Length: 198
Image (cartoon, rainbow, N blue to C red; front, side):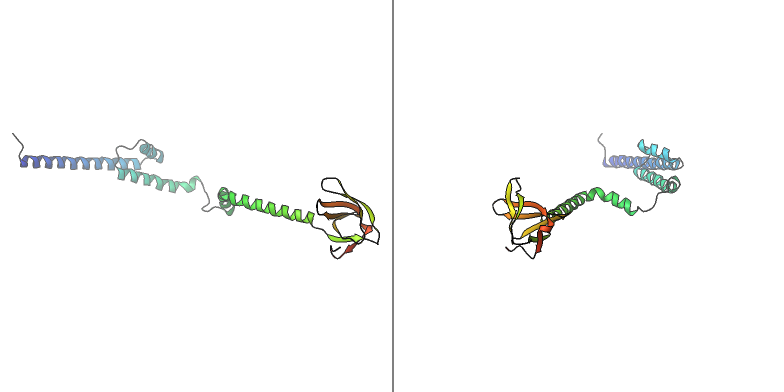
């Protein structure tokens, strides 16, 4: 015999009632398990969570987790007394890996600037000098490649004074096709001149 609409409604009502009773039973069991677990030490609570705590509903699992966190916050000061704020050095050290690119770039720029200054110092004349008197003086000029660049200092001509050490000076003279020639002569052979004009 086919089911009447009243039979279907009665079955649905019984199923709904059974489902509500089952949900209430799960709620009671979950609440009882939560109450029981809250009285246990923290490591047992963790173990219950790791095992999945199948007897707990999601909201009771969350409540158990919060109780563990609250208890661990209370126990933390007695376990370790860490400062509440980091020192400036610790903060700087923590950020260092993120600043390495900028620090490396700045160090390379500083090195290039320093090398440029040293090169400029080594290549810039201290002053301009000329031969004392009106006669040429014998001097051995050497070109950058090692060959001879002349054999005298011309009287009245300006030479760039590069170094002066222990009475011996290093002079430099420009040769348009070959570069700078250098020589070393005693400093008492020379006198200061106002500029490079010839």
